[in-house]
Image 1 (cartoon, rainbow, N blue to C red):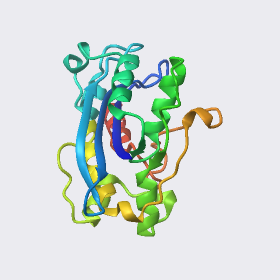
Image 2: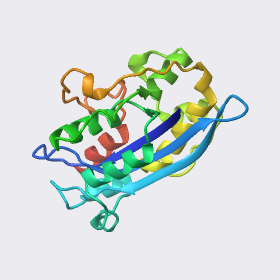
Image 3: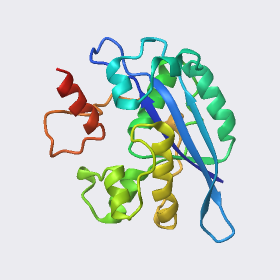
Image 4: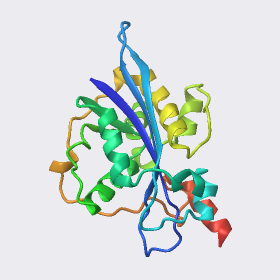
Length: 220
């Protein structure tokens, strides 16, 4: 069994005319090693060309670092997902920091009438780690703060898909034996509902995209 820690980056749109689109996929593969732990054994990375809003906004580049030239010759979402699925193989857990990446995959695959059965054995590492630390799950811990608590440096740049996946994988690897992973399948779950992924109304609440909220405020 493989453990895939992945991260997505999306377009940042001020207008609600279009929904966000995936523009970058990063993933780290981990497998059991001879010592009973996990070792990082492979990685995956691709940019994704958005189709509904093909022009990369200034806010998107400021938030994610993804530029127009990065996506101009990148595969479209459907092709990128087929490549990602081929890399995943058959037996795996899909893990990410927070639920938003799974929601995005389900939303885009559903919109494009793509199969959802590959989005399986999904686990929210942020939720698992927050529970493990004894913190209130309504006040989830951010990735950088969690790494600091573990005395692990954040390597790379935040909101870069591969860097975020790698740093999440470090936490996953350290606490793997304490996590209870769920088996599930998005194709068998109730109809997906759109969810708010960030809010500028209450800074005290958990804000998975707090940096993005601040950027939007500055741009106003």
